[in-house]
Length: 271
Image (cartoon, rainbow, N blue to C red):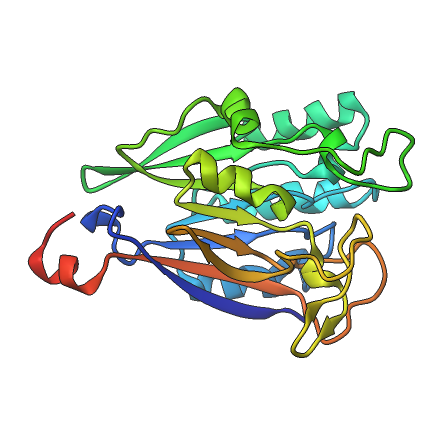
């Protein structure tokens, strides 16, 4: 079973109208099912009462049932919530027709697919922006691949090439599956970045963190949880499913994020 993890992200850039805005962050489901038709997962999401759901990739993979499980989950969630989805490396690793078919199916259901795209979310006349960054597969370090390049880098300039410049007038939330390159997202200008991919490091060692990332790096820097750097925030989900090895001291998790204005601004009624 999974646990529910709650974070509060406070920012003076957040419009007052979005104070208390809740995001449920789902990542790395890998076709896992919690109860009949994901009933247990959906119940926990209902308890969180989110304003939107953000999916940051690897929700489906090559398992023959994972795509149908994902589309069924989205169909059920869309009855109550807007759903935003950015693919991860496992969706990208599908054969091109299957990958495009998956994205088209999700869009047909009403999911907003953020494949190097942006979307404006409005509330009571105020706005924030959601962005979805999809990195080419060469940026996923995998020593088992023939094209593996250990010194490859992804920069803020690369992020601009994919997404353009951020709208600096709006609070920005960036969905980006791989947190390995978080400094590029931070320097690009994302106020809050949501990621997954690392699975919490698979084996959690108290006092040291997650042991291993999918690229077989020991003790990855952004293994899971909340990171605050240069006034920007990153939340890395430890994921709801599994794809390699066995989790130890590292339960799957459902992430709930509450956006908040600083108390002083809230009390003065300023955006």
